[in-house]
Image 1 (cartoon, helix red, strand yellow):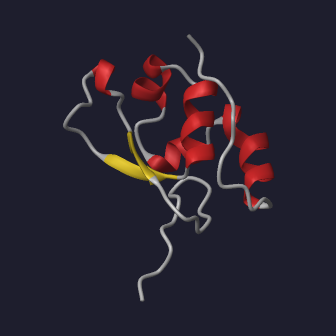
Image 2 (cartoon, helix red, strand yellow):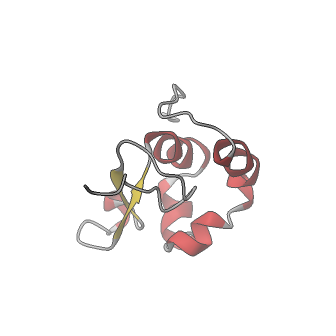
Length: 91
């Protein structure tokens, strides 16, 4: 019996997680560290922060967790049971 996977950003237990490159691949992070994020967190991170910001300001899960742009979202999602969110990434 394994534990449910946990999102390293919102710290909720969820059914599945995906790997998020802390430094985006396009910014040189192809072989760098990754963290497990739930789909709502992964989508929201990429919706609210561009790759350059992620590489320069938020290259650890701790700094990402403190990002001012994510605070309202994190407050909301931590109280939620949501597993999927339909927001669109910036183009």
